[in-house]
Image: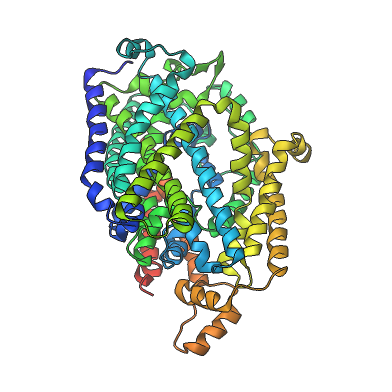
Length: 618
């Protein structure tokens, strides 16, 4: 299907709206650093929550989730735990409030509240800036290429080329589309900062929600008139040691996909996902757009509310769209074009289903929504990388007291430089793909242990943080240089999941670096520790610092919420998972299961109203 005139008009109206929003909030955003990077800490928590949800509604992730539901059915609800998706529950329950109490502009700046301003804090600050910048560049570089390839399906170059005054080889058509649409996100992000990003994201969320409802209705109508032929176990979220999904009687080629994914021994994989997920979540948010939204809230209480709101507004509508496309793909499988390079690529279910089933008008709305999802992720990531370079390098070491004009100019220059570098990396992706994988994977592998200990252990210092990150990064990078290591260690596992089984090794090596680095040097300055403990009020192993604080302030109350927080996390994860399952049951017509799941959602909401929401003031 090709875009009709009305589809093009809808997309153009959306793009124009993003430009208008950027221009409208430009003056407000340019007042000072806090206004530009954090929206002046004046934006409502629900707007920030919608913005955060919009940033997580990305194209590539949606394509992957559609494929997962198409192949694995209800069991696919567990696959996002690989990320892990329930980190939002940890943030909601306690970590967002802890982070927001620091009153800083970035995650790197937060390091100084924990470790002070000595040499150890400086090197820890530096490594977090490196992590944020490299991780952000990786997302930006490949994100715009993914968007370009997606839009190429609906905007054939043979039509567009007649209006472009230059020739372009087929190889670079996705790059061209990516650059064109990226420029809109760059404009409103640079001009309006966090304020522009948030209100544009709210618009984008509305578009995506309407699109999701439309897809869900189309799929429900299709199921009412057709039979959804799937394996019996496809309809159940429960599993044992093995996955036990057999497509032989319906679509036998899917069995090969399951084998290649390596998810057959799902019980063991699930345990690894849970263990890794809890550790990654307990480490707190990575220095990305998610952290910047938390720091942009008005208060710690609103930071907690914002993080909780993300799951409520994201999961039901996102999975309504995912379930709709997966169901349409199964029912009308014979009409889908999934062939890529002579082989079946099940990740083409989403674009192929859009091409086949979405009528004119609705197609423009849906593409505007998916385009909005990309632009939201891109703009948020750009703002985060920009914040670290400008706030944590330029303002810290070059110009500590910039004028408003200098502030605006350096943000524009740095933002454009980031975009230019990311586009260059994307254009050269064939050459730098392995290098970026090494860097990004190494950085992420080294992140967990050090960032857990920084919250919960008083003796942990900046040197322990630095060496823990370094040890973890090196351990993470080894498999990329020693090609046969993972195959030797985990020969019975599929290649794509071997790295998750390697995670415990990374964690142990990183912990060794943390412990060695910590005890090779004195503890962090007592004044810094007391300030951090009394301001952030973490629970954990803070006994000696607590004793020091109550000597000066006998009325200080210790945080005794550990067990209540753990209870709320369990209830929150159950509720979040039910919110994922609910729209799937709705689409596929399982009404009894839908009602049971709805009751679980209501029960979780009622419990957490009493055990979390009502206790936020305390």
